Length: 132
Image: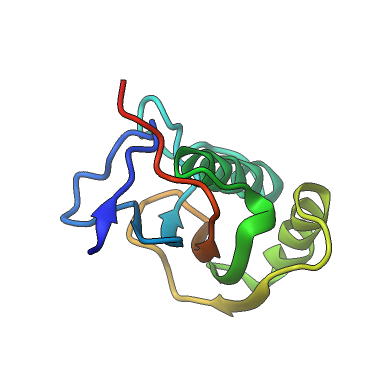
């Protein structure tokens, strides 16, 4: 059965789950928002990519996993010129073997100020963290 994962990241006001799992399969969609306030982090693509990947790391950890458990990632950018900066942070924060990945350029994202959104799939060995 699909269940949401409590990640410690402020939930979206939209009708969606930020992170969910079914058994060992995990799905997470992240934007560059401050995990405590929910506000979009301002800055260039490197700053925003780092925040998105940190949020993804938090989500995976809450489910007993890590960035090494990623198997498929879909990235949306609002500007193709941001790809090199995003890739630089990607290489900094992830190690081979890299997950399967698509990167697309979109006309815009629904969260004003966001330059990047990541939707990821992982297979995690751990169980969801207990709620405090």
